Structures are given as C-alpha cells and as structure tokens.
Length: 218
Image 1 (cartoon, rainbow, N blue to C red):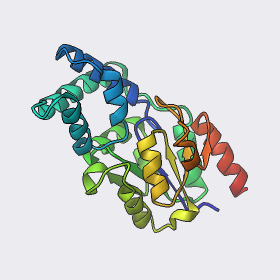
Image 2: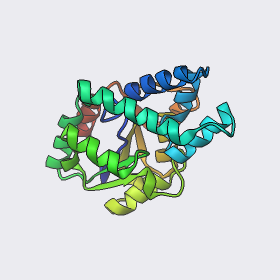
Image 3: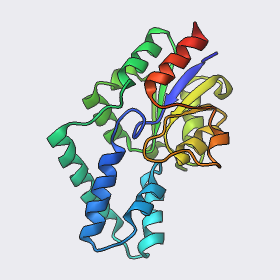
C-alpha cells in the first residue's frame, strides 16, 4: 500500500550533487584549504545552517561562510548555465507514473524554496509535486526527521504507509526517523553498515523504484 511518496531532490531527482562537489573543491582549493572531499560528504543532505556549522567546526570559527556560500552558488550557476541542470535517469518517468496512479507526491529537500522551485521548474519536474517542504521551512534540518514529518502532514499521509526516496545517510536517517519506508538510490555515498538497516530497500536507479511500485500497486 502506498499512501504517498516523498522525494529528496539533490542526488535523487537532479544529478546536482556532483556539480556542488566540483564547486566546493574549486572554492576550497582557491582558499588553500585541505580536506574538501571529507567536508563536502559530511554536508550532503544538510541545510545551510548545519553546513555552516560543519565548515566552522572543520576550518575554524572565523571561516567566511556567507562569502563561501555565494562563491559556491556562483560556480554552480555557471555550470548549469553552460551545460544545463542534469536530471537523474527515470525521474520524469517515475513522477509521471505516480501522478497517473493517483499517488500523492511530495518533496523534502534541504535546499531553500526559491532554489528548489527554480531548479525543478528548469528540469520540468515542478508540476508533479503536490507539496514541497524545503530547508528554510523547518527548524531542524536532516538528519532530524522534522522535514519529513512536515511533508507527511502536508500531504495528509500516514508515514507508515508512505515511502521516501533518498540517496544520502543524512536523508535516510531523517526519513526513517519520521516513520517512512525509505528506498535508497545511492549517489555519491554508498550505503554503510549503519545505514543499511534503516533502508527498506536499496536499488540502483529510479527506474528500479518505478518497477517496484508497479509490482506492489498492480
């Protein structure tokens, strides 16, 4: 039974996390700061408040988080202007199928509303969502379950009868903590022994998610 499906955005619907990683590497290299790989992976799935906290913990309390954020955004925007915003294989097909099947569809992303709306619109995916909850709409970001609990409330679904589609450990902890069945579609981070038990299912792509949903609905 599927009461509703709630998606993460970056790394699940949009192949954007690789662009963010490249932007982080470029920005940190320009600042002559080490450890970009570990730092960016620790921040995947976090909202900006928590990301800023990780940066200050890693590089010191005087790390210029505001200017760093602006630098990352400028680099990311330049990449997407040049090459477009890449969409994950199967994203449009899965969302279209869910809408056709009458399944409520939500979004729970750490990205802010303005950016999320713009990016989904550019990718042609915004029209599929019944409810959107973004990182600037909640007090506590992932891995806290607040964002997924809020999305369930807005969709009017019972978490135990719903699914979340996630790629990152922070997102999986958030969705699992909210009581949803989490399907992990790994992106930059492979499932670890502590994450595997929290995932209801681990698949290779969104096309696999669609095939599974078709089985349990039909």
